[in-house]
Length: 167
Image (cartoon, one colour):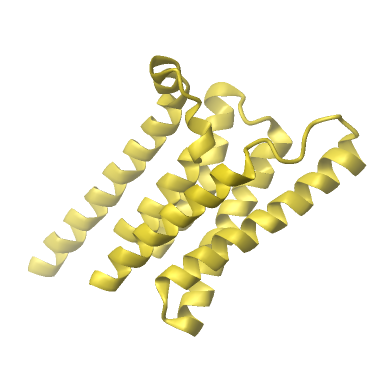
């Protein structure tokens, strides 16, 4: 009975986490406007993904990775459809790589850092193919400064590494 109650409480907490993640993504444009700062620069979907990796389950991290870009596209038409597909793929790959590398290294910091860098590299290759070769638009391949991407990647990796170390 106690195990069932604990499982139910955990499930409820994961559902609440998912609702808050969706609400955050939904409110990013409004919050950006209020702060006069483009929050998309600090990768709000990856923030939600990192928090899911740290504070929920592997399964839930996959759900967050897959659904946040789709949800954002459905409520705001941003990112555009092909980019939404690329971002979903990148985030799902990020989760898979994290757990794969973690199983080999047992080092959460190295695992998430490697997973983010690798998934971003594959995302940019896929985006280049989509933009330059298939869609033939003049869109820039890298929209967010590499300096900001390096900084956010390091912050996310340190956070996840520290939390996993405490476990």
